[in-house]
Amino acid sequence: PGQPGPEPSRSFPLLASGSEHHVYRDIASGRVVKITIPPSYGAFGRSEAYLRILELSNKYFGDDIRLEGIINMGEGRHAFPAIVTSQPFTNGSSPTLEEISGWMSAQGFEALGNNVYINRDLGIKVMDAHSGNIIKTRTGALIPIDLLIHELSR
Image (cartoon, rainbow, N blue to C red):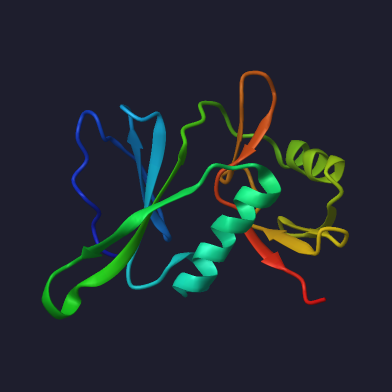
């Protein structure tokens, strides 16, 4: 889907390519590099919304997502800007939905169904909380890597 990403290499292998990102592992830095697939920016399609989600992920889930820059993908009238971010590489496996539900509940989130959780005290709703967006480490810790976070109206 979307436009092809940069060519992978031995030190920069492609990990995944989905509907929102091309994802590479930067072996030298120990980070994962994500490049949005033009012409949209993640699930909400707007660069401002995409960047706000990253900011909220850092704030509420202790992530270390960094804005690395903007690149042009494509050529001529088919060229679109793509947002490049990075975050720490986490090795692990996929947690079960029950593990995710328990983890979210322990953090004060209430399940709304379909991988959606709400924390009224924090004023946020978390969507897309499934095993493809959370990694379970060898120690059993759950690490979110691509949650959609939305602020509730106050």
